[in-house]
Amino acid sequence: MNAVPRSWLYVPGHRDDRVAKALTAGADAVVVDLEDAVPAAQKDRARELTTALLDEHRPGGPQLWVRINPPGTEAGERDLAALAGRRADGVRVPRAEDPDAVRAVGDRLGLPMQLLLESARGLWRAHELAAAHGLVAGIGLGEADLAADLLVDRDEGLHWARGAVVVAARAAGLPSPVQSVWTDVGDLDGLRASSRTGRVTGFFGRSVVHPRQLGPVHEVYTPSPEERAAAERVVATAAAAAQRGESAVLDADGRFVDPAVVARARTVLDRAAPSDQPAPAPSSGETR
Image 1 (cartoon, helix red, strand yellow):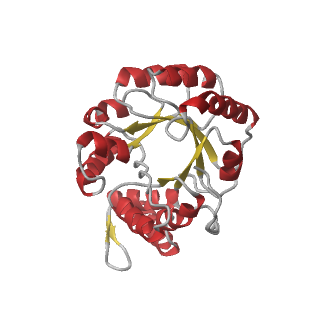
Image 2 (tube, rainbow, N blue to C red):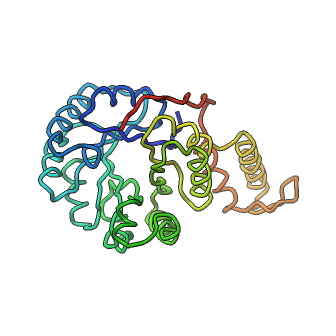
């Protein structure tokens, strides 16, 4: 499995059958959803099943995250009470707008947090939110809600917002944001093309809502053997130059290698899988 997750598979927390399938679907991370995917009448069941899962979960397999309900809501407060003291790889915090609320979640749970910016207010305060707590592990967009709040087209109207969240994340020293979901589950070509655009514009990894989306996402967000080999050559060239007391040098192909180029090469290697794993086979099983 990659050290940096390429895929984040959402699964509704009230469906224990789908959660079990999601954990073996081949995702790098599974996000048990207590929020949008769970009907109001099923919130308590989702919470109970999720806490039981966390109590039983052992290391190995995909990372296990939980998307809570918005802090400050009754459901959100119940989520925090249930998760306090339990182990998870982290929580996703929806509708993040208030740095004080983020700090309260971090202090209460002591878990890494990914913040979802889903409103104009949240996007406007992205820089504050990214730096609100030492446990903020990432920020990203909830594009459907954000587009509705901004009164824009979800694709064309959010180009600038995507750039803004990339800048805010990197300025705060956070990882590249995780790309938002592609909702047309049947359009894998569209998912693949959109993911390529996301990768070249500063995102890494993608949230998905169905196992059949994992293959295209892993394909796009796994550095190719050629990319890895090129990165290894850059690092080796830089190491040899450093031994000669040089910080910038031309490589064997006449390309300029300086510290910025080396840093980019190391990022490629960090994101590469330690061993090649086959992409998950298309699945007809539902997870959401």
